[in-house]
Length: 280
Image (cartoon, rainbow, N blue to C red; front, top):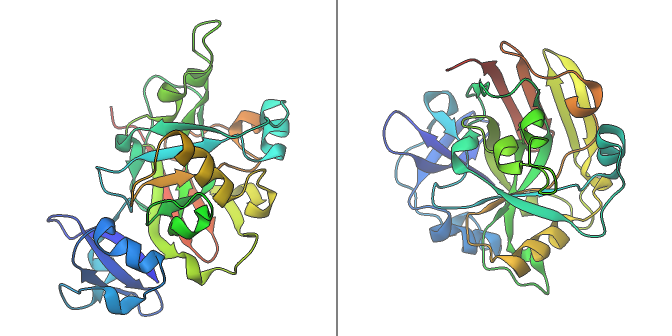
């Protein structure tokens, strides 16, 4: 199943998506209302629909997360990315931090070019969506499904932290209206059990910049969920970025500029298509 958060000009609502038919059907409530049952595999019969099906093109796709939920970023999770783009080795454990909700944009919304940066970077990532209370003995069982993220980062701001303090990840990762998320959540049962192997593709103006696979992760989704939950408990509807493969502008020097068309794709989930725009 696929779930999207949408608006037709009024209040946001959730809907069950049928990509093959190009339509969606509104459902009642938010992820805390139906997410646990879907995560446990109880199926479509647990949903309460609030209207007839309508074309996907009749709505704007919003980031599939409520404003009350947290955006967690688990980074440093691809050894090739660390080596090729940063020149460092993998750490002994994951790292994690929070991204501001205001950084998020939908699958087709413009990326705002932050006025304080000259080094805007792209990072295609698999994003896990939490659908139930985490059982640390089986953390993957708490994952409702997956969506696509582009963890856009201001690299010069990231390096601007005072000496001895470290990176300024808030400034780098929480720029208003920069981070694509969507187009929808694809539930976990649509993927094979065992080690996830999903291709991660990012193009800028049609030029392939990142081409990786989630099988390259240092820590898998379950391990990341447990790591974060042990430090700050997940709630139903929270999302977690899981790291990016090699090929970012940090390594190539090909930073984003206004007018660039950025397409992030995970086959089997969907595509983000966002144009970099100067808004200030």
